[in-house]
Length: 171
Image 1 (tube, one colour):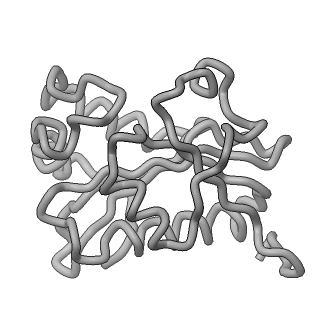
Image 2 (cartoon, rainbow, N blue to C red):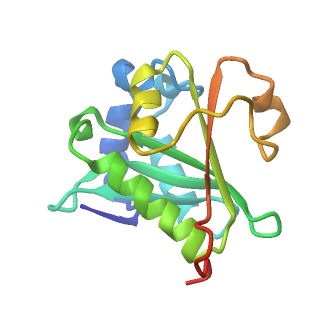
C-alpha cells in the first residue's frame, strides 16, 4: 500500500464510497448528492496548490482505496486538520492505519507542523475505536485550534496529534 497523488482514474472508486450509506451515514457532508463530475473536480483541485493536501490511499495494484487529507494547513500556526475516508473494501485491511501514520509523518516531518487535529461524530463508534486503536484518546473538549463553528458542535469527538518531542520536526 502507498499514498500517491489523486488521479482522474480514481473518480469512479471515489464516488463508490460516497454513495455507500454504510461509509457515509455519520459523515457531515451530503456525499449521496455527489456526482462523478464532482469527484473529477475534487481530484483536479487537489492538484493545485492551496491550504489542503489530498492523497489517494492505494493498494499494491495501485487501485484507489480512499482519500486522506490535511486540510486548513496553516504553517504560521503549525496546524492542520486530518481527514480520511476509505471504501468499504479497504476496511479491516490496514489502509486507514497506514494512511494516518504516513500523513502524520508528512505533517510533522515535511511540513514542520506542531499539531494535527480531527473530529468524528460521536455516534461513529467504528471511527472512534479506530483512532483509539491508533493510540489517540478523545479530548475532553475541542482543541483550541478547532474552527469555532465546529467546536460548538456537541455531536463531535475531537482528537489531536502533536509533533514528537525531542525530534527534528523539519526532517
